[in-house]
Image (cartoon, rainbow over all chains, first blue to last red; front, side, top):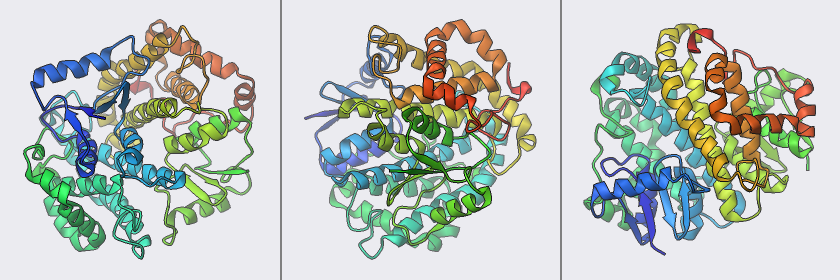
Length: 241
Length: 241
């Protein structure tokens, strides 16, 4: 089956967590708004979202079309895709656990986004910069350690079995963890450098994912968008302390 | 099986979405920090979260103990419980769709919380009141309609089959939708009154859920905590316009 991924063409955003899974699996997929005409792709995306007759409309991008099904919510797309493209274990308890980790990453990603947008998604960063600075102070001191301590500890607990979040079995959550660390390194280089050695297993996981053949090829291709200041992970030096 | 629910004893919070499902199903469950000594319950909860030897530790409450399994993330707990307590359809595509709706409610709930805490969860409301006022203006004008339009439209699309989010089949997402509407009515009474007739199907769903025998009995019992100003849904008149 050829999957169709619907997402904004100019940013990695939440679509990237799905792209990484499709790329790692070597799945046949069309990135609708990026391959072909972006305007046409975006129009098609909006039509699917705003189709009042659909019984199952997605609330927002990214969403995935798989045959007749349209599936939204990043973590939900990965829950659906995981067993189908060999990126999650088959046993139900493990699937629920991988998904639980993915949802915790999703919570972290929302907080990372809201550091530069604490007031409203509809405002520019420059119009909420003061509030962003205040939020960033708390985020850096309280939330980065809270989440990274947790994820590092999951790696430690499973380290006898292997370097991945599940120990021996590689899964889509390793790709999302890679993306989160890569994004933090881009957005908060000063802070991440300070913390570096504290989260050595997360750093190793990041490097090991980047070196997987399909991911390395993807990262070197023009299918991988660069981080930029329209996405979730933004580098504003005034927020990085 | 007797389920154990771990959550803070003084607020409805995210635990309430799980409680409503357990109550509707008439499931055998222990609300650990509320039945028995709250201090002992909270200690037990913290121990489970901070157990460095656990391969699958939860990041935060609520979490559910089901035999040997410990399952975290509200939407994930409902994904697990749904088919086991008769509150989600058995077919996989429907399960994925119910979960997608639940995740969209979870996103909305996070935004509702962050209206009164736009800067940091570690600060009191009074220490971020100015920012909260600014965020509330955008939230009320932009986000409440965005989410409620979407959910109302899901009800409209499925209304030939029945009054629930899935049409004919009642599921845990109807309970969560009820809780969200109840919470908005508590936190933003002025605004919700203004919007009232626009979201008539959501209002009907709210009333129908409240009238279900097990839910009505639960809401009338002392197991249902009142809304209060420590939870997700808080009534601060200055934020309700």
